Image 1: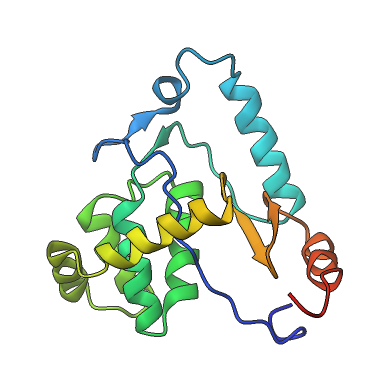
Image 2 (image 1 turned 135 degrees about the horizontal axis):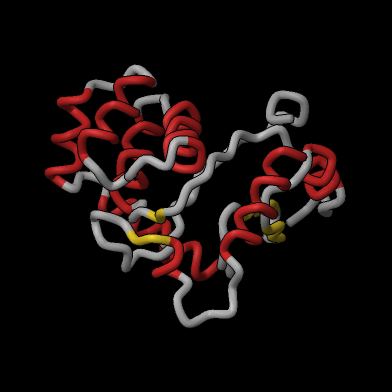
Length: 177
């Protein structure tokens, strides 16, 4: 669709559970005190992923994504943004990897052609902290409250969507913002 409709894609970091500690949290802990049936929720997410032909594993943990977001900004600057974001998605949602862990992130970066040592330096220096902070502010201003969210000409579409729904969302927007 990106080529077909000649779209540019801009990734926007979103603060999804930024209070999550480096070692992560179980989903049971994350949703404690809320009336959420976690196994039902995961089953639903797995079905949506299957319907959309997306991979999805049996994760039981959530991890802090801040470091992955900072590396994502770096990867974008290096022309490897889409590949990096897709690799992080697979690591987190398919394999259940801790995407806050430095070794995990270095391996992901290496897998898309980025240098692991540079990865560690980028994270140690927090070289893209301000870029992620700006994204978090922009997400709040835009009204983004969940991931994924798709923004086009000021309109928001929330949730993983089939190809036709995304295409219709784009094509139905007015020509002038």
